[in-house]
Length: 71
Image (cartoon, rainbow, N blue to C red; front, top):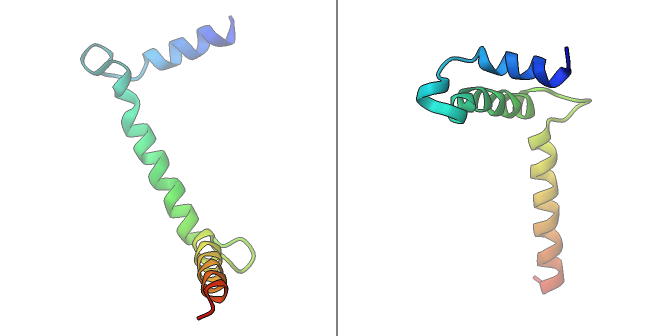
């Protein structure tokens, strides 16, 4: 059996095809997005999370912008 046929058969197992069509997959994407957000906030790699790095970089950019203006 080809891989594409297996995928089609797997996708047909998701309920709501007649009523919602392609949009029946939206709850899976919402859950996936929520899981990614939780991982970015709570999972530490080394000593930092994604948001620690983001905040630090943002404050560095603001500091550099102020120094360029001469404040």
